[in-house]
Length: 461
Image 1 (cartoon, helix red, strand yellow):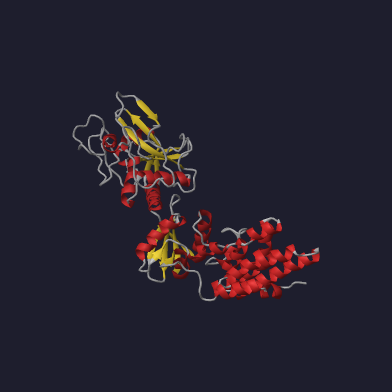
Image 2 (image 1 turned 30 degrees about the vertical axis):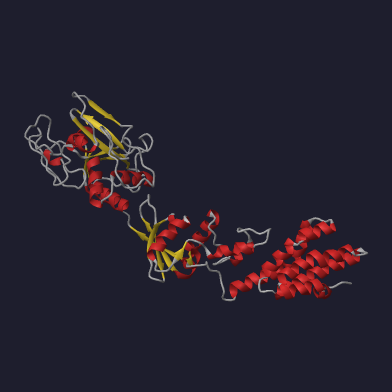
């Protein structure tokens, strides 16, 4: 029976080894020695022997070569001529070669990775190398705001510090650009792990076990720039090396300021009094507390956020009225020539406080108090004196009083400046209603830029 040693000792094979090395020898072995032996076989047993001899000879050539993949590729290219001689399908010969050499190629790939040669890009430092070797930790800063995008702070051993949003690292090139400008290393966007692709078999792909095993990093997250594989790898890395810190967000600060103003404030059940005196209103029928827009504006100014952002936060927390259509939070109310906009909050919600003092009506001037911060003002029953409240002016002079300053507690005049309340209605009739154009809640990612709108818009996004 023909064996591997006889195949390797063939004159043509030896001549190819001496002249060009194992790559040409492998081609000669398949195209000439094996094909001729199979053609001359007198029985199935001899054909089987020739096949086993070829596999053994190829194993020896691959094992002794410094470039096993090149030897295997040369043998596969020779299957075209061999299949024509044998009148057999080329695929069967290719499969025979794979059966003989697959384990050896796996060993070669493993040895190359673990021998110290490692995976590396041709020039510079691959992005995956840098992340695996240099990243120390990621601090994920999560705020207490209900509507918030966490911030990731990356810390590397070469003293690089970068800050990203929660999602930017899922774009490999966007992350590369931030890192490349921060590090002194010659960072390149290519991945060293992708060199493994050149050594995959025809039935292997980058989402398979072999690539995952040979890629840099753990097998559970193979590095590759293909979108799904990149997201898997970078998400795994972030999970492994991150810790979370919680900070108080600006929207939380604003909401806590509003809560405190409600809790310590004076309110009135009579809506007309609330409008005329710029006070907090408690509506026991709907179990709601109505707060002047000015109170919200002052909280936004104090915290350096926006009315739009506060509206999004309150809507997300579920503290706004369920009696308004859509995602609205406010309602414009007119009494005679006086107009005002209130934000309606649900008193049944555990986070919405009740005002410290709630009056049925304003019977005495000393009963008039600030809607937001609990200060009191003295206003004559006929509106002869102007209530002054520091930087906040909730109270209004009575109609027909020409002695008040132009800006004194002028909630109606405010509409011309910031688009909150709109023009006061003509005539002396009373009206109360919501405005469909002014209270569109922005999405959770709508940002903190206010959009005040026009006319009778509350500017709550």
